[in-house]
Image (tube, rainbow, N blue to C red; front, side, top):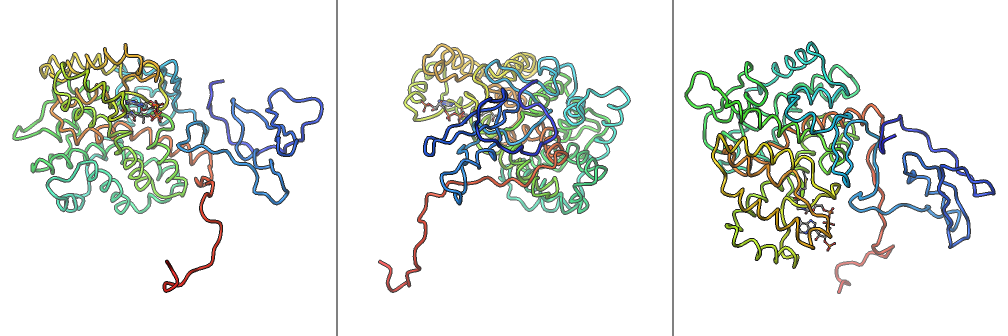
Length: 449
Ligand code: ACO
């Protein structure tokens, strides 16, 4: 069975001391401080951290913990949504390879798959699409507070705040145990994220908001809300519409990344999904996560020409700067999404004209893939390396890049949130290793030195 495949959470079995015959699916741990041996069950190639707690020197000790800053080797859930093999460069949603979904299934089809576990039938997709399409409008009051943001407000800050504010419009959303109410919020969030994103963009540009056109596709309507001017009916360019839809598919889920862990962590307190998703979007905003494609563009502009690349590589190797869009916590091989994006780029550039930054990106990639530093550190282009170049060619300002990522990731966040609730996981509450002063007496002000 694949690592991380879902089963219902199980109670921790009692531990036995290591005596004689050792069952096969166990780990024997010898504590050299006491000479005692412990048998810990292994499930899915993992041991339960709580099973370490019995390992003590003195009976009143707290017991052993595992120390894992950044969760580099800690599974915090069982999940059946997305499978990644970082060494082999594999990404699958519900078992389907990303290469078979991108370009063949629409974003709403993939959202359904991620959410419900199966590809929709024609009838299911029609119903799902209808539910999304009928929730694209924002409450008119939302426009009032959007107007309150400064003209140069970063659209990701606007996006995060507006998603959080939606909870005030739908107070029933805190009934997270009711499947019908939960489903309703899922429709709303998938439907309204493009509207929020487009309104944030129009605000930044000082343009009047363009309302949703529900006759268009999900991506087509988004382009309409972004770029419609005086025409009675906006007609999206089919190549750009398709490219955007594929980009959303590529971003739809990525198992336990920083923002998804935030979604699950915040959701584990049983807050409403709008508040949890605002937190997830905030995590995505950071330059080490969804903010990276914005940084890639800034970096390519800073490099400026193919000639200047070797000098920049030197600065990367001396650790003065990082090569943005390279490296990944999980992929230690080419990110499969980056390969697909590279293919889309050519189709987009046929419509928009070639982005001159592409030459710098291609040369940077060529050098990095041959260079000992990058090879030995297993640093390959990630999803963000080429997406920014495509977004720029489609005339999105860099500030919109993490917002585009957030639209695509919305079904993933929601499916992971729902799965966390279904599995009845406890509130997220990690431990710490305390390294501060144990105890001391209060010193009055006049006696402090
Ligand atoms: N450029 C240069 N060196 C790098 C890079 C990079 N982009 N990424 C990692 N390294 C080096 C580090 O300096 C370190 O070197 P050392 O072992 O000699 O000290 C080693 O590789 C390991 O680096 P970590 O930061 O420990 O790797 P981690 O797995 O924690 O980080 C991360 C992954 C944050 C994505 C990192 O590769 C990075 O900062 N990349 C640039 C930002 C980026 O593109 N982020 C987007 C990720 S994709 C996404 O979120 C959708």
